[in-house]
Length: 430
Image 1: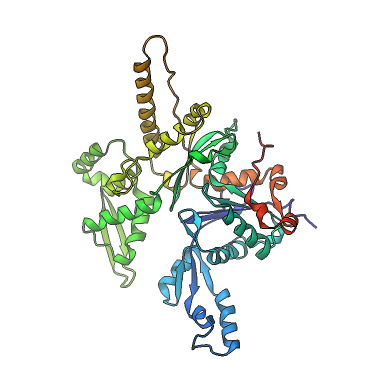
Image 2: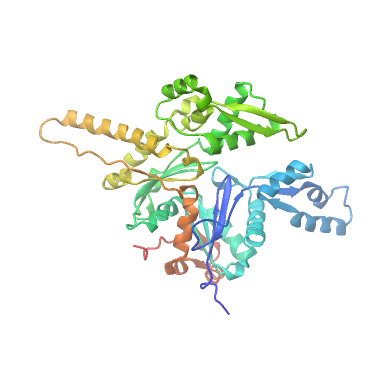
């Protein structure tokens, strides 16, 4: 019989918006599923003790069993909630953290049995977590994985470290860098030195992919485009993914659009969900104004006004002085919301401006012989950055060191869930 270490590990990268799942050794995930669960409310209500519908024990019990079985995840969950009023949607994750453990467990169950169609007892698992996750959360994850799914081994990896590891396929393994991870629900700027996260320098900002969608939705509504209200968020999301780009100068971009609208303004065509009638609308300035909220957040919100390049610079300046040059040299993008055209160019230019101004100021102050050396700023962009975290997990989980770094079921049974609080960084990799 094959041992679980000879089978490929299962790699699941849980995100607020989407979860990527697949097997180690693959270049891309087998599935990218929206992180959402739809539960049949009618069964849940019957299953609640004391409810008038099911007063006898058997009815309640069977309703409880049905409630456990009758749920859907991902696109199917969204479709069910639209077509039937009995299903209610629950989002297990908020801002990169697990918010509802019951939903999360149901979600994992469908991922393993319905999507990957594998027996969890036969595979080691690599799960990912945000860099700001509390140790208690790791314990809950460990409990669910070892108790409910009976997995033989588990490794919980920090997302930014995996995003850096995604560059492993290149000739040199660079495990020092700043990961700018912009997902759907959270944006983190995380400095990593030699594979270890510099925890005190992590910066997180309250603007992410969902905010870009909301801003586009708001701009289209304000302009009076006739998008059906219950469809407007979904339309805005598709517009963001298909048509948005990053511009180098916002004023010039407005002028370009005004001069040649035929070239820059796009048409969106859809059908109204209730009546099926077709409608169309224009997509104009929102094409470049959407992603602009990372560089000029004040156009979107009064609460948070620090541009992303400034956050990255502050993050590196707060890191130990001997790591700073290496960090500026390797700013790595990760997450779907960094995929806008020219995003990496704009980010590199703006960070470089801040750094060059500082070098110039210090040289003016010093004068004479002493001159500060120019600092190299490099923003790394690659086609795989949308699922860089998953790919990094796939690369790491296919190394022999992975199995020795995992917590095993036997360890869990001996020491309890607290073993999941810490996960060793593989040193065998370099």
